[in-house]
Length: 338
Image (cartoon, rainbow, N blue to C red; front, top):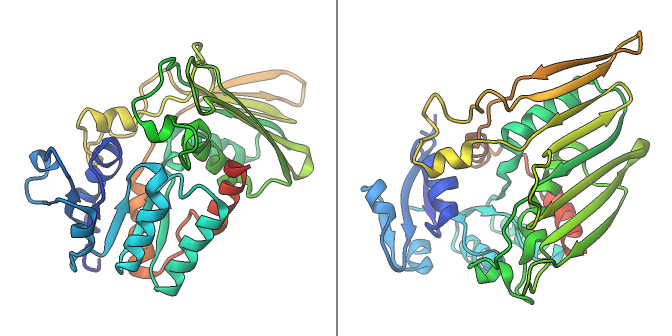
């Protein structure tokens, strides 16, 4: 293996603490150099050897840093990514990549001009439920696909404390840019750009300034319909993945354990990491040649966000193609911005 990639985090909030620091500190391909912490210095309590930068500019001025993870509030992604690229850093950028297609184009054009890699972090491609559903679809056992539903629902009636997500007029705010980026990326990862789409949004929480509900209907070739839905006042349990084809159906709840495990301090190197508990398996129903329904349980594929960091390493060190491509992000922003 080539030398580890010296990496810095722009923030150590929930995203930095859960989705990034545990991986760049345990993956041999990375050297976790430091993190920006303007006020309370929390990261050093877990990672005592890192540097705590007082500002983003101090991080960017560190000549040892090769890769910067931009995980600041979504309305600042565009600005901070440009700063990092122009400082000569590769960038791993949290979703949503930007607020508009035009901004995304400028970011990728800048990365090309400076001969740097821009990679967007789409961790839900490596959730257990999505990987399990992808495996069933690619097996061909469902026949020709008719209808697919992906959902990510919450019940959070109160307005959230993160104002950049909740304030009208703030770029890249609201539920569409937050959870919609995940659901759209899941779909694009499987089927590419839709032929057409219809988008519906609504505001249902008292005092909400931004959409807290959305529904997309995406139309693909061969009459495939994909429905993406999310709401912040959905109290009941809804399946995260539901696929219907001419030969059968597959249904799976959204029960990936990685975020909860990381939040409790489990590291990705733990043998139990990413393994869903018994009872969360998917259900596959196939109609056989005698027109009988045969139901079987499908074991959950192990979730593994470390695959993102493996891809980042090989992109930077070996110039491999990062799996979340520029076209994927442009298509995503076209749907988000609509």
